[in-house]
View 1: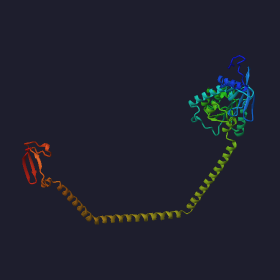
View 2 (view 1 turned 90 degrees about the horizontal axis):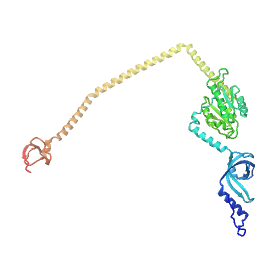
View 3 (view 1 turned 135 degrees about the vertical axis):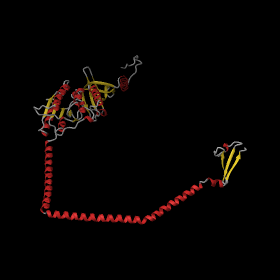
View 4 (view 1 turned 90 degrees about the vertical axis):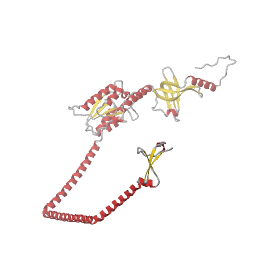
Length: 433
């Protein structure tokens, strides 16, 4: 709140109207903004410019509101008179008329904030547990023996689904398990209906001979509150335990529930859910016709091939002498080839032996020459290693009295006797220094 300064009449400030409106707007902005307000829409209009104008009211008051085009374009629903909403915006003064005005920056149906928070919290929990994993999703049967259907007896979705199935697959039995699809008791009734269909899927009643191979869970569209039964955690876990694939067709294409994420397949509408599990009879009849045509062609080709084989067999059996003659000619040709090959092989071997005999002396001479040259080279290298040749060049071989070779000065001591072996004899010496 704000207070005007208390002054005497003679010193009171005289406000201009516009300045006073701006001062009031500044005071409200500092005191309240941003502000969230809940109320009922009244007098909602959308101008050609895209701006929206309305009033929010409750039992004790109302406030005029303006929602400009940018914020209005972000709305995910169509506001109507009588809707309870929550808006977030900024209080101000419309100076042109001196009116209090709330400029709305966002709007949502009242109560949805809490529901959305619950929805996303449960979604994150179940997703972390793996209930939404694509690996656990099962393919839908192409030709189900029976279709289970869970919906309300009074729902328009029931008529849509039955009409689609009757049109496309009138020969497939449909088992309806009725349940409320809206309200506090809806989750419990839907789970009871699913339980009865699960029993038929696992152990079908032989009295009715209906085996459930797929289940449709459907209902029409509505607000989030109307579809809230399909966001139940226990229902989600029961759907995950289904022994057969489940198709969830709840709401319209833009509606999403927890059941949609858990089911094996999500359909945008109840009718689409029915179409997913019902290949049209005409398509199957066309396939049968195509298979029949292909089978006729295959049988015709097989008969033709067998007829040709029979003709060939009859032709051979009609002149057996020709066959015997051809076999004899073949045998004679093989005998000649074998004899020629044997003679040629023998000639090659004899020629090789003769050639080896002629080359033997020359081979031995070459081998002896090579051995002799290697021996001479080894003798020369051995002679070069003779120590006497080194002594002939003036060197001497020194040894101590114990026969140990004296090769370093450090081994000798004064007065030690040393023998020096020369090229023509040995000399005994004494180390003097």
